[in-house]
Image (cartoon, rainbow, N blue to C red):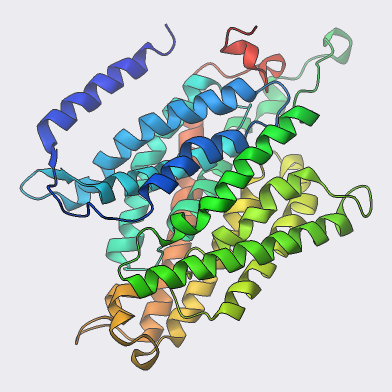
Length: 416
């Protein structure tokens, strides 16, 4: 019975699709990257979150549930800002954009993995999609920021929305759940992995790693821009991976041994960090440098920053701040730098494709574009953190998980 309201919401979505959505004909029928992004959303993200020893059913199942719900809702919310005669024309590109927007929900899911109930997760998803689409409109339409791989509007937003939710869900918790030590029953620690769950999580990491260049390059405009985005993404991912392995052996708790948490996650940070600049003229060496920086940033974040966040009351189960948040900020700062350096001589006719606001006779200057990039990053962080905190406060009205119920499939699944 607890999920029955979601069926009501599904019927509402059905009605909205009947009223507002029509087929878009052959427009954007040949858009790149839809199938690969689809695999990332449902297979990559799902398996990446199966590392908890007794939460694999929930990681895969809720990932599927959340993504299927979010894709439908995101298509409506995103296209609401671009309706023609009160009609939304669905194309392969709009489906791709909805898939990409659903990634914000799955990133937030990672922040509160095992800490929020299924019903809380679904409520958070519905609110987050609406807020995320508003943020995307601010970034892409109002500020006209270049963010082809979504490092700002997708990765940074999803991470800090998730941390805002996590903070709100745990705000005041120590006072409300204080229990005399003598009467407190021992609780099995389910917050870590097992050998087999870490192996299944690596499946997700590998799928994400392989398909990430398609994700970053999917919304490029020209063949040259597309190829540049693929090359830059691949090189950044490769250099981040090498850096991750080396750094993990240097800073892991057992010196010179590798930490699987780093290998599963920080190897992907290069894809996030290069996302917003992958279609820009950053040079092949620059792409490698971006990946190296992302590897350093992510591994050090997992090793030193995540424990600090947990201590101050902001749990981050999957470490989304280290994989999506800080690399997203890093990418946003890089976009401001490279936008400021962009010239007509360097980009030629592609200038308006990479930086839409700079195209045409009345285009803005490179310095103005750089400022817009920085403002887009700031707006995303503010909207994400505030929106997440408010959403977390709303989600607290639903029945939360007790300490015994956290990280445990038994609450929602029939287990063999």
